[in-house]
Structures are given as C-alpha cells and as structure tokens.
Length: 143
Image 1 (cartoon, one colour):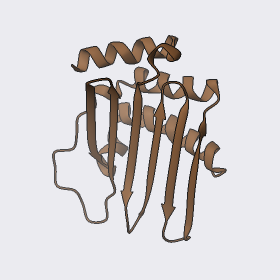
Image 2 (image 1 turned 180 degrees about the vertical axis):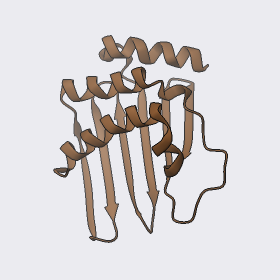
Image 3 (image 1 turned 90 degrees about the vertical axis):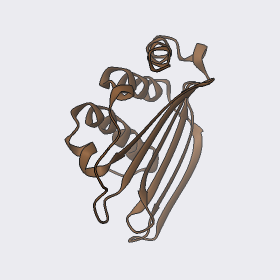
Image 4 (image 1 turned 180 degrees about the horizontal axis):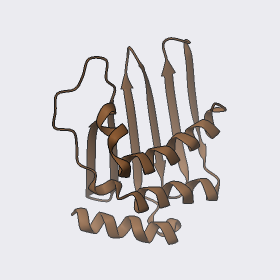
C-alpha cells in the first residue's frame, strides 16, 4: 500500500489535477499549546484552522491555493520522503505537541504520528514541515 501511495504522490507532483482526491491532513498541538489543523487536496482546495490560547487568536480559512503553493507542497511531500518517516515510539514528553500527518488517496492511507521533539531531529520531516510552515505563514498573514 505504501508503494502505491508513493507512486500516486509522485504522479500528482507532475499532474495534480489527475489526482484530485489525494489528501494531506496535518494536525499539530494540543489545547494548552495551541492547535493547527491543515487539510489540502491535490487540486489545491484547503482549509486551515489555528488556535493560539496564549494570544487568544483563532484563524479559520478555506480556499484554493495558488498553483505554485500547491505544487511546492506536493513536491515537499514527495521529495522529503515523508511517507517513509517513522512514527514516534518513545513516550511523549510533558507539554510536547503531537503531530499527526495523514496522506490518503481512495483506499490508500498512510498515517504518521510523531512528537515535536522527534520531528525537530528528523531531517526528512523537517524538509516537509519547513515548506508547510512557510505556506501556513503565507495563508495566515504571519511569519
């Protein structure tokens, strides 16, 4: 299944409109630290919801990514090897935010559950997440 999904992702990079049901779901955080939920389909449709309890700021946006934004994120998913990043196996640390990433297409589903500390030390995950963080900053008007 992972190999089939990897192939779909690679093909979607060059022709996203042929794989409109390819979906990325990214969730990070918990109630104390704040939460971010981002969902994107390969066609560019997205939703973003972010809650920061410290600043009492909530962002909720739905729309369509620019083609270059969508293409950059699909390329980051493919080139980073995100589908092969292992889930965390150690106990989660106090106040350490969990990160969940789900890639799906039809009946193909790959889910990654990684703790923030492990994510920061995993170069493949960092390649993906740096592109995603840049995109989220653009969408939310933040850094």
